Image 1 (tube, one colour):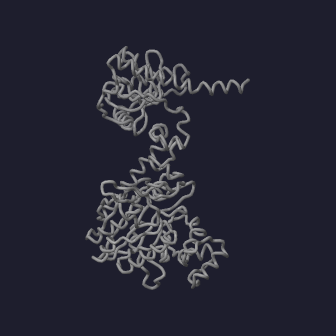
Image 2 (cartoon, rainbow, N blue to C red):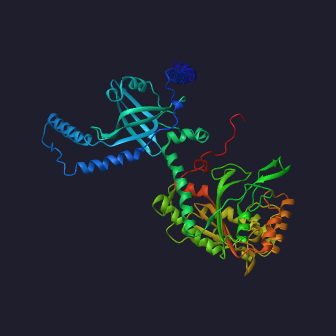
Image 3 (cartoon, helix red, strand yellow):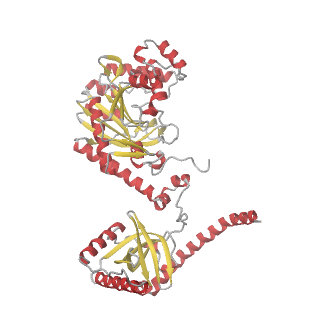
Length: 539
């Protein structure tokens, strides 16, 4: 019988919801018929936010009540103590009301409790919530009757003065209410918020309303980017913008999205990197440049990957990958301090200390340490393939010795790199845009920064030899012909720029989303993207 009742309740839920939605629309229609359509209001004079309401009142109260003699209720009966406290509250309230602080706030109503001639509501804005006391005698009988018909989710403007209730809560005594927007949908149940992750990602606007932590994450994301910009401005970097729609999507190992430009009757791609255009600017004499922008890679979805994500790349003339390491270490430390107030961050219960010097290790040393294989002693491709088979590392026929070294690194090393660690001196086979190490032409001057087992950035001493670069592109074309869909193609205009002459340059790319994930302790990249890529509901 109980099961049958539950089924009946579940069947009635959509009907009940439809009725509730219908009632909200009827309320809007009644307002419009009465000439009180909230949607015709174009602006509201918002003088303060909720956090300012509290700080203003506390400062004002401290000044007026300096030296105040609070009643000593020790030894009094419960009745006498209550009377003394009430008298003290009334006296303080009278003093405060003699010089009231007038404010005008605006926000979404998240709670309402009607009690006859007076009601309480909570108004939420970007900085938090504040309680509002709404009395019929203060705002008038008709406005009060209209307020009683309001719904959770409605957006109000509130004018009034600040006071402290008997329970100690700083509140606003409303003198005028203005319905600014009528909410026609129903917010999730207030005690549990919006917990369904799929809905949170698809309806981020509801997530931001219901989940304070989510809102804080995106505020901190903005602070991270602002801190990066401040740091780079102090280092005399210029922020620039380069094309997103390109004929040759190079600069990274990734599959691009492709499209067709009707006006020119040509095929174009969405950029996968910022690199090649920024290097053209170095050639042009802009010695320090960076760009923060979206790039697009036609790849899978997981906790750390989204097909469009935010990348920052910067290039500095007359330095190398060592200079990029110093810049990165100092910038990460600066950003953490600016955003979190500390250089020690915690992710998933694990502490990472950005205040200490970052560890530095070569890729070969790392593989030797964690896999027990010294690739410096492996001379031929056949030897590399043999040790890969022995260690059960899968590889493809097109993979060279350096590719196999990288596969070992991914298999045995990455997960161990929790504290900030620069992994240096990659094999040339996986670094087509990087300068060779003078003492070892099989390796390049490149590093990746790892934290929490994640790659956080990728940097080079940039290849500026146009002849060498053409040979590298040729090798990439061969990889492409063998089935590597992530290989680069030859960019003739970029080669022409190198032939004009690019000075010695250090360059680096940062995954901004992963940095935000670490600094906000967010489990997935979708938690730090306002509108992540989602599969269509009708698919």
